[in-house]
Length: 521
Image (cartoon, rainbow, N blue to C red; front, side, top):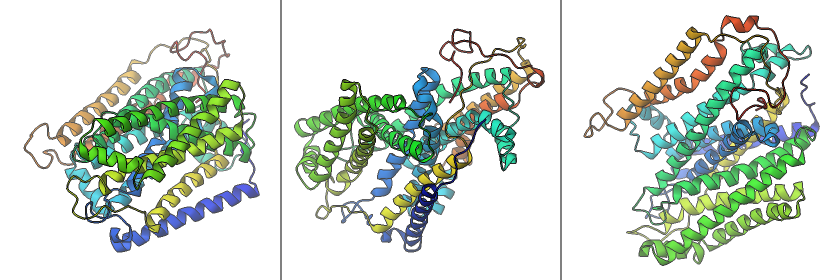
């Protein structure tokens, strides 16, 4: 039977600290909301400041943390890496909350968030950074992960609802949505989550590349125009997400006493993944610096020198040192075939320090020191206390949600091996037709909304010809991924009458040859 951890003094202290940080973030943004962006150090480039500062740095950082849920999902669901399955739910939870924090950073950076939210649904152009960031990279990817998180938690929600000591059974039953752990329900869940995982991985590449292209296609900004920008975004996301997953996993293991469920083998896997990604990231840094220094136009060379030897040298070499240690700590353990959790946590922490500095060096120098026609003297951007407060509040929000969720729902998925039904079920054509119709409608809305947002119907049009075409695109994405929910929840009546079966061995036939061991994430 599933049991929840007890409330401890340490848990209460952490909740209070996280809540205090979140409230401080609200207070910090209230100052900006009242006084506009003059309360920050964001200014017009070339006039003593930068337009994209700490908020955009953490837009990229927070959305990059979504790499944690998707890569864990890919490994444990598609590649059958059983060692990573216990941390899958934690990774997905961090992904969802981090995407919300990234969207919040976008709104904070707008200065007039209400104005932006009201204009985006009507007039947005798919070529604009706001559209790509807010719809493709956040809203679509967020909803896809939310659907998977909901479906993957139904079985444990049903178990919690059946427990005699559980409080708030109504909420658990609502999440379970009629799930009774019957053989055919497990088969349907395996099918749905397998193809949903494939779609989420594709969406991850599209979403993260979109953010990379937002920067890389700014040809007038030295240091941004690079073909490596999009792939480097993916690699750096992997470094930060894996590092944070190590730190969060170890912290939750100690806080909720999950040592039996989160063994050292799990963190050894994550450590190996971390040093490989960090090595690739260091290679990208070397390639970019060599290219910019020896073969780039003059403005790019000057900017590269300013980063390596000039006013940005301190954060640059701090970043390189952090990445170097992030590579060395787990790599040495890999070579010695030993696992030190303390050193892995240090590597995970340093990884995120390096990634934040890397994002800062990507966003800021090109605006403050890389202008092609500078109007005034270059100005080194230093974030204001209100900007730092907003970011601290978002970190507090992530910690608060994880702490509260871990106290009310199992953080470790319960292993459920594949179960063969007692009697084979005939395919229900009506059920399949409904799912196919919902998916087709969603795909049609996506194509229609995106086409009109790109002005494909009229190249010379300033506004979309179809009212609210960006909203049509977003709704289409939701309907498309919602077809997985329809597939599982609208079960044929025969499922409710099916008898339970017995677990079979790993060699038994399953829904897909890649998922014969059953679903636990």
